[in-house]
Length: 170
Image (cartoon, rainbow, N blue to C red; front, side):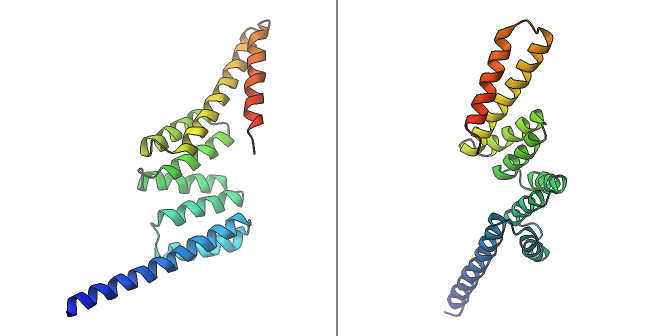
């Protein structure tokens, strides 16, 4: 009877602990959504002092770093996450988004391929992969136009691809 009570108490404490953790993620996420970067960072870093390997909070920290204009720090955080937790698709996807924003499309594609390997049905990464392929296509059409400026077809294709990308931009 004593051991059963101990197990029930442990489960209750674990549930309470998980509830408290869920609140910190929600709180930090809300601060991120409202772009209260400094406050979000303070809470995230305080949490990470007690749980430094927490992947969810480290992912949030990378969003905060990027929001504060510290893209390189965000990339470092995400790269560290992909090394610690290669099975998580989100860090790979978010890293790919930062690479793409910098025009580092080959690296973005590699990161997205890792995200899809980690979770083949990850729709966000699959969509982002399509966007990166369109961007790579635009680059190829630009290169083709430079190599043969008299070829009107490549210019038309580049414009069509650019329009497609713009039509779905947020």
